[in-house]
Length: 226
Ligand SMILES: C[S@@+](CC[C@H](N)C(=O)[O-])C[C@H]1O[C@@H](n2cnc3c(N)ncnc32)[C@H](O)[C@@H]1O
Image (cartoon, rainbow, N blue to C red; front, side, top):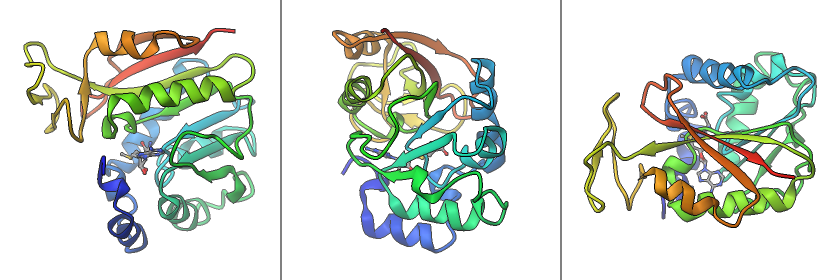
């Protein structure tokens, strides 16, 4: 089990017990706005189509759906119950269901992207690969490249090992309360790992790093080469 999100019983209980905001990290308004803001800074416009991988309970969805043209927000997650909670307890009370059909939210544990369109302008995965071993990132990039048609910009976050971290040691992140690990959740990586996972894949990967994330997650931008 890579993280709490793989514990079906526990995560389903938390999602249905009203903990759907807390279990995806809290900071509901702040992290929703931060994600929309960084997408807009990189050029997201209402007419663009956005895919939110590992969308959780739609923290970004509540901000992106009113901004995007109706139907242009799509999302996937490992946990159906989190998407259900987000739809029932956040999207519907905000009156956004006309702009976001429930069928745009797709359960997907292995980055198959089945049932998801093939053309997106922007893709985001915020605080998803921080909970997964490195190979999942490579797997996602490979499958996404196979699935997509046309060009796309993919923004995702990682924890970076702080300078001086031993290869087998923990890393106390310099901002926020989190300690990260090379082998367990929350995972960190280093710049060389990013170079390695991109090798042989049709993505150009840039480690952007800073985007004012309260927990010190670093931003990475991958562009699909056509
Ligand atoms: C910390 S939450 C972040 C949710 C959302 N991205 C946000 O920022 O509000 C991590 C999310 O990643 C999802 N996740 C974890 N492993 C996944 C996988 N293999 N495929 C898809 N989603 C996954 C979890 O279910 C959870 O909803």
